Image (tube, rainbow, N blue to C red; front, side, top):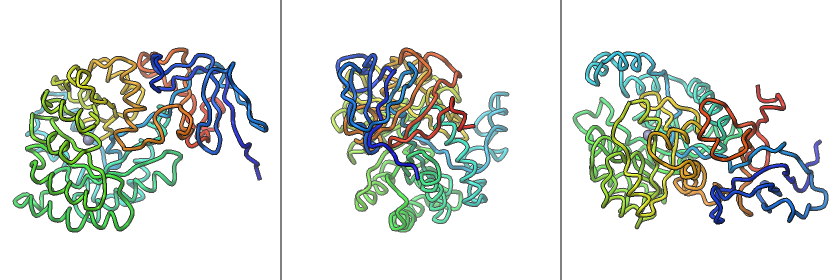
Length: 414
Ligand SMILES: [Zn+2]
């Protein structure tokens, strides 16, 4: 039996706390952190440290520590992959041609319905592990490739199992309103009734869902159909978030705001008035540069307007087989800066403090007393390096709830 010390003290580090303490990145040079009972009990300059009696003192060897990163928008549970479709698209094939060849989201729905829970878990686990090793301690996972009662529940169960069977904190979001399944092609309202009357109540009853999401788009669901799904979510006291404004300006953002959504996501075509309304409602803008990169998309979310109106901006991988096969949050920090025009500090806030807000989690996202001791340790001197280097794999360890889940240099992580 290993007796765990009452407290752990981390020294020989600089802490990018991401708290609003007047310093860029909330930086504390030559910092110390005290972890007690899975939470941060003290953080500050080392010279002010009072080491608690019996504490274990650990050196971080001069590395930078940040809050554990938070991936607040992923679709990482799915069957198959769409690399063949990616090849065809790069060779010049259009949307209709790819759909005719059996590609597109429908191919993922088919493969996901055919996969067992264990198969989905094994594939998702591999992707989750990569996101974790890129610095993440909390990852949101959506359903949305089942589009029937049985498979939507299976996807959410896989999400819950990922949270239990890996060190990562996983939150699950029901996205049954992703697209209208083929069997309801002539009756989208009938599918919305299936969600509201069967899928959502069962997911709630089985304890599988933390939030509800939908895709508001002419190819998916109308604002009034999204409104029906969100009204049902509110009856179950579940928070909502929305894919909105990705392909065209639509009323999606307005529906999200009217339901006090935690976040509106994508937003490439959001208008200035919608951005102002988001600021008013406290709805976070979740921006997904992996999709911009993969699709060669030219439209950009209105970052300058978001800044001006004080909308909190978060970034996420959007890990999914069709439009963002991305499983690295440090890369997303780089893409958010290079492609979307965020500063490196805004981008890092976007995968920490603001990502926590996008999930409605106020116990993480900064290094401050009382927050969970979720940490990422980096082989860098300055926080800007996290979004500067590309493909360097600079995260050397992640701590979740005060426990190191892997330490690359200790050789226990493979
Ligand atoms: Zn998405």
